[in-house]
Length: 477
Image 1 (cartoon, rainbow, N blue to C red):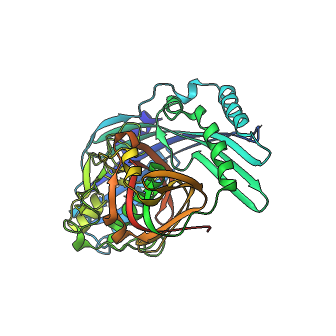
Image 2 (cartoon, rainbow, N blue to C red):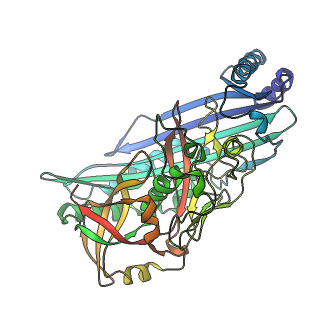
């Protein structure tokens, strides 16, 4: 199919300033066992192409699942028509957009391909993990699942650009819920926070088969635990909570199209303004945030973005100072500011827009013991279970599944329903300690939403644990 489509594109490419084709073929499979019972196995295949045209300052695009020569020719005709209609009527003159002629490839690192493990073996694995979770009559729901997506993507330009990228994404998950009287609590591992690239070897690296004992013990602890105390105190956030803190209060506010005014009707604005770039103190000197497409197993690692721009590691925030925003080629031309290679689309039938990719907090030099030991009064929190942030991505509130009191530098009792709130513009300035490599974890979410029509994309966040001072903490919500 790829060779045929490539030949068709050469034949139908128009007489325009620029034309590209982005072909995406995706195969997704989901397997879940709940309460020992296999749920319906889901398999889906999708394929199509997006044509993008830049011509005389206008831009147009058209998508099609008809990959025949005639289907692509019709898409080219539609894209050319839209480029003509948009000429002189857009917020940007598209002649200012630098379009590369990329050459390259990328392949996810896979040691044990998903397809080589029989479906029956996957089911047996999940049944075995499910069986470990039902250890007490108070456990009322339990499940284990695996989701795999294989994506092949070809990007072509009319002047000879060619990029082939092959991705293997895996999302494992285990969940358990317990109830006693009017109290219901849950503990989860993986799922929306632990997507990675790779094959079945990912399960070994995250110790998938060793999580059930911890989850069942902790969910039963939470049933009888007191609510988290309230007050202003230090907070130690585990990496599986830090990833969402980074995502919501750094990633989304720094999307360049959002800073330029897009997204207002759908996902809100941002407190960040153009004049902050290069000078704004976003956090303490310990805050070092990078756009990093170099960690091979991270969810949004790639060699080129969906506009054919080569991806490389860039500092977004260095020593607490905001250096650049998350903007692809179009937004960079529009703003006259540097950005990163993060113009991305969720599939063949959506246009690329500014998206987070791998947005990471660089490790510090504090061990977990040192971070706990430095806290006189505080709470340790892990694994997000609720989040809310205002439409300028500034004021936020997060809740976690599991907490422990820290007093005089030592862990104390387990507490349930730990919550904290803050303001992005000041919260990161209270970053007091950043964990070392031993606390650093590669995480990722499969369903970050943005855009109209909506696009859900994979986003990676690798981060250590961290300590924040003077946080407004409360429990019981």
